[in-house]
Image (cartoon, rainbow, N blue to C red):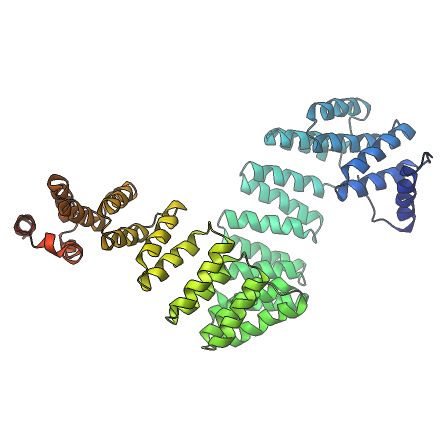
Length: 467
């Protein structure tokens, strides 16, 4: 079913219908008026009003297939699939060549995760369709649900053959190329497409992104320039061009690109952040940090903004300010693992060991299982004299890194310090076997243990055996 945009007459029909709902008067509308009214409500998510319009429309036009198909659409939206199927079966008996019946049937099958059956049904609809491009798009989407990207891509290409300006299909084609990691094929396809449609800013933009992924920055830059020539209001092209210029270390030019986007539309946190990074690269620190502040003012939930501010102060050894801003970030999002890791590192530099240990512990709780996180937390626990807690930390670490000599040396030292001699010797033997040269870890963290004659003897035996 195709619908025109509401013109003045159609606006009048809509106003007349809504006025009627406020009175007891029932007015007559022709079926086309009802179709446009219902379509308007469905497009705007006003389901209750759409249902009222469908009920009244079928009272006035009980034989209209199009109006009944709207009823099917609402049934599907409300997940009343049995009712939808029954009505579709009845409509099929009346109009077995109506493509919309097959499209709605396919929609139901798709909702039931019967994607191959949905495709088969849409292929039948193709036999009756006057315009096949929408059907190819639906088939392409079903293939995406099945992760069959080659088939999806082929169908989206058929959409674009039918309508060269179907940019939704173009985006889907590139999505398939990207998923299949077919960068060269994507470039070839886009180049061919641009031969037919040379002023398509979307295609130039996508071509630039492909070249960017291949690190062919000059070609990417040229593509984004053509995108801007095709549409000088295309914000995405300016942003991508800015990213390329950063890669080429042309930071002043990149800043100008990002500033264009701020002039064209409301400021975006991404552009403000990139401007800040560029100023920092140019050594203009005041302007850099000003734009980092603007970034978090624009979007307090953007973690990259808070991280940029914190790392800026961290790099300049202004740890108090770094701690201040990472605390602000944590107050906004206490489940952000990167915030907690930075919090831990900064507190460690300030020698606030209890807070640093808390930060590393929270980092682990949030799923950051990097080896250095376990090691940092464990070493702090050792400094705090929390030896049992340190052992438990490293034993958990072993589950993720069973052959880490760094962990084994620490477990050896801790167990020997607590007079758990047999456990300590086992871990020491493991550590020496994994990497003899790392025995300096034991010497640095547990110098008194390292000097024990029994420990020195074990190390000497391994040294002699490997000589």
